[in-house]
Length: 146
Image (cartoon, rainbow, N blue to C red; front, side, top):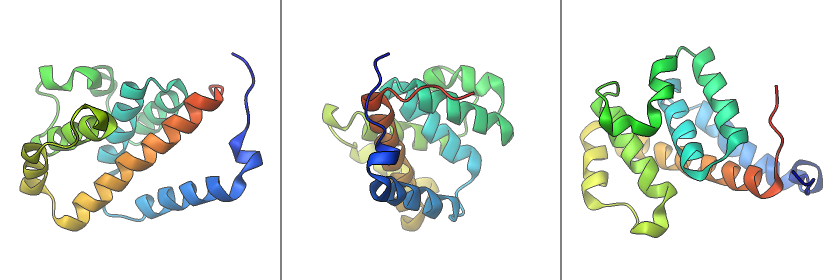
């Protein structure tokens, strides 16, 4: 791939702002496994190889199973994910593909079944942040790390 701008070096303040969101997310009480599922699923939808590579490795390191990660893009066709995870994955898909009709009231209602307003807000921030990272990585052709 053609070399493109490295936003980390040209706009460090902006990148640090996004890392600020990551630090906020890390300080929440959201389960790491749930955060990993969000990051991997959004990255799959967006086709971000850099982020899929990074976040699947992190998920495995934090105890996620290979089987669930292998089947994440077909989560609706399995019984591997809890109802809470299904609600979050549905929200992740609708937010990542927001141009296709936004977030359905039924999806938001499903989220309210399992999460309070603070947790829903935090989940929305996780989804938004990974979508920012996906767009940065894809548009700048960030190379895979080892």
